[in-house]
Length: 312
Ligand code: SF4
Image: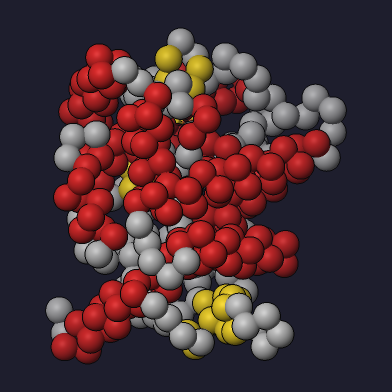
């Protein structure tokens, strides 16, 4: 690493201990947020340095999410605060998606209970989402149940580790949290799962279950017939959280792959999380689920290309 880069990393790491008005770079030397102090209230806030999404409402949501993140972390990132933040982002994404879905034409959205075709793929999560899921499992499961879940995750991880997103999209590789057609962590399911809503369940089934259609779908790189606004909404929430934690707190907010993240966090959580909170890239082994560089995904999510955030 160059001296210049080291100096940048040191600056962002110290951001976790307090901040002042101005702007900061993320680990890739990009600046998306500006910090300001409201003269009337004296409170600190953040705003986007420039739009990161095509649509104004997405930029407003990203800004709101970044301010919420800054408010919840209160100047210092702790595990408890990052879990609280993830829970807040999850609730906000669901409220947003529900509001958008309520405006869809009656019967247009095809998703319903027991329909699980979208749960057979690599799922992207931010580290706070992964912490919230691990925390939920620890809080709600008995010792025996937790051991069973950890064992199931390990077995799934062994089968899927190293597969590309294209290879992972297969009926052979259900999400480890999919049980009898339902999500077993529904309360804390990732933001991406909250944003996906299909307009054609038959298409979802065919492109997953029929090998020729699956191959054509993977080859095309395009999305299916989905309700776009909730997808764009979840990306806006996620982007705001990611930018705030990366630029204001110097944290590694690059997306993780859900199964790999759980494999890490259910087995050796303490040291890894502590290092991550200290600005280290301790979750590197779970990196994945990030397709935000793809032009097709940028079009789908309405991203202008300046932001980089979790995708599924
Ligand atoms: S977390 Fe739940 S909703 Fe998301 S892919 Fe897994 S089973 Fe499906």
